[in-house]
Amino acid sequence: MASLPPAVLHAEAASALDLLTVPQVMARLQLGRSAVYDLLRSGQLASITLGRARRIPTHTLTDFIRARLEQEAA
Image (tube, rainbow, N blue to C red; front, side, top):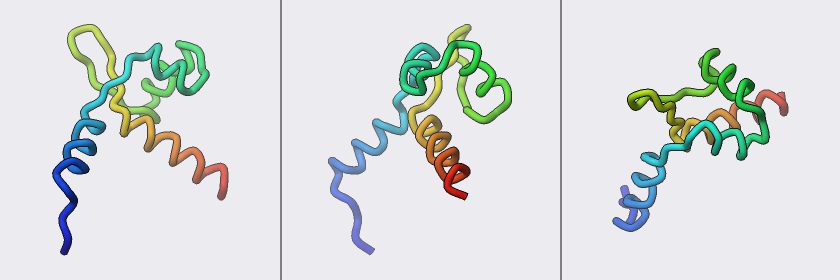
């Protein structure tokens, strides 16, 4: 089994650690604040809490979009 070059592994690890704020997610999805918080509250979009701040991992947003696209296609 071939392994990935270290640069690729580092890039994948770094993107997995990227965290977005609610306003950043609002901009990417072109949704309002309450719509994004509804997605978080319902569990459709996962997040972590750091102190009083909500952060959404980029991979979680990507997974959410991919799942919605698959639902639309079905």
